[in-house]
Structures are given as C-alpha cells and as structure tokens.
Length: 194
Ligand code: SF4
Image 1 (cartoon, protein in one colour):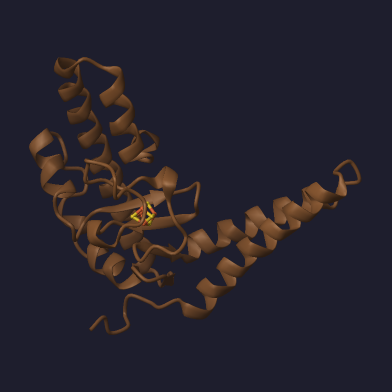
Image 2: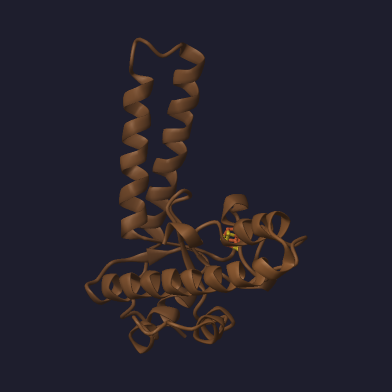
C-alpha cells in the first residue's frame, strides 16, 4: 500500500527520472499497485462500516457508496487494464492517507491539491484540510487522539524548550479538534444516503 500513497507525487517523480520507454512500464506498475491499494482501502472501509464504524467529512456519503462495491473486485486486480478500469471510475477512487489521518475520496473537480498537474491523481503530499474530498472514520479519529496524546507527552517533557512545547500543544489541540468534529458529525452506512 505504501507504494501508492503519494500517487500523484510518485508519477511526477518517475516522469523526471526515467527515459520514456521505461517510464511506461513503471507507470503501469504504479497503476496496478495503486488500484490494489484502493481495493484494500475499500475492503477495509466496507468491513468497518458493516460493523457500525462511523464516518464523517464532506465526502463521507461518497465513501459509503464506494465501499458498497468493494466485494466486486477484491483480490482480482492482475492486469493494467483492470487497474485502469478501477482508477478511471470516479465512484471507486478512495485513497487512505495515514500521514494526514484521512481518506481522499478523489473527485478531480473538487480537488484542491493538484490543479497544475497533468496526471489525474491526487497529490496526498499536498493535501489541503479544506478539501471536499476528505472523509474520516472512527479509525482515523482514534489515531488523531493517539497522535495528540503523543505530542502532549512530548510537550510535557522538561527537556523540551517552551516555544517548542507550545507548538506541540497547539498541534495536539488541532488534532483533538479534528477528532471532536468527527465524533459530532459522523454518520453510519445504515443511514439514508439520499
Ligand atoms: S486535497 Fe483533496 S483531492 Fe487532494 S489529496 Fe487531499 S483530499 Fe485528496
């Protein structure tokens, strides 16, 4: 899955680093790995939603819809054509981003990260917190709180200078705010999606 996380960034990087002949092969491999990562993300989301996990964010309902299709292609992606079919289907392109602790439910027209790039792929390394493609599950909210706790522990250390401790505390407060917002706004897949 890690191979596919900075998908748009990786495409740009390999475009600059390989001759054209080799680049096509690398891009096909990236497409297959990205499609498999997407299938894994959707399968996990499908299973989480089925056991009552909540989801929030402007793209939450689109994520729920995408997850309903996960069983159809789980474990079946072997060719570049199969990968392109998934990556070209805007109803399926969901990317987990462990660094930002969110899911990108990618819709090019709503994306805030890549408008100047030629590739039709999200730039998770440039993810913007106000993007309409963001969704979070209880899993992400738990990780936000865990990360906040770690920062608060660091800030409390006597070895940490005050300015740095303040920054760590502000960051922890921000992450806790995101988790609180998730807990307030979350919905469940059994709720009407119309
Ligand atoms: S800015 Fe939007 S489209 Fe880009 S990676 Fe973040 S959620 Fe996805």
